Length: 299
Image 1: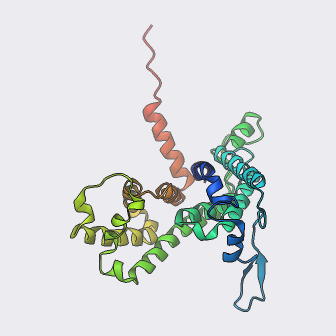
Image 2: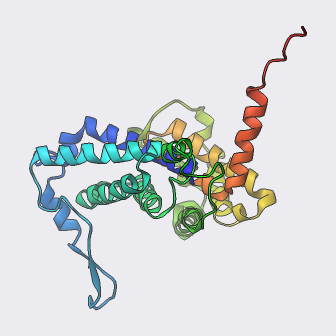
Image 3: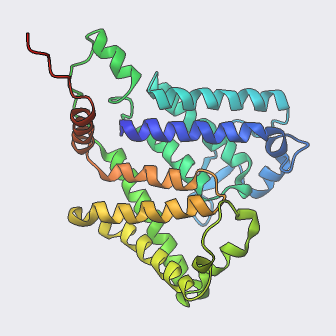
């Protein structure tokens, strides 16, 4: 969970840094999406029942705020929280502030978000409720140096990590379900269309990959990989190969289509399928392989 925190926190920092470059366009009153549009698409409360008898307030610290200076200050606040979360410094406070900040911004511009933004928001919430600073963090490094923590991390309940894994599978399952009951995916022609949407163009790919009959392969292959990511990934003998196929799928999307950070965000979720001992053993093998001590010369 510590490694997941470090990578996801870094990706959220990069995401909000990219937004900052065009901040005036997306978050100011003179941009594409002034504050009143956010209030039109989302109510102030989240209703838990059909008859609206039960509801909770929606987290939105910027509701009604239109002052550009306040918005930019809050954006810097989120950037600092993301960086501290990535480093694992003041992790508990930083991760909670990050979750509140991400949710607030997303509620303000809810109708212009994509799937990657949803992964960011949900991951920030999981980091806030998890003991994500207990390992692989500056908090633990300083605690060990001051002898305030044992050399070996204390065992904790890792149910938040399982939540991340289940959420990852749920993403793939619902995606497969919705695609299969749509006409384009079931007939095998769905991947023909994104290649013709030139606003997504990134790096060139061989022409035959976007033509028939290869379109059938990429369409049904995508469905197969996503279904395996929702089911067979829990079967340990196949886990490595299923995750590798998911990485290849997102690697191709990341290379060929301009969907910022989406592939990196999804692949980061894959860490949740490994136990802490497995990750530690992998690091130990790397250290043994690349950090071998030189053989002392004979006297």
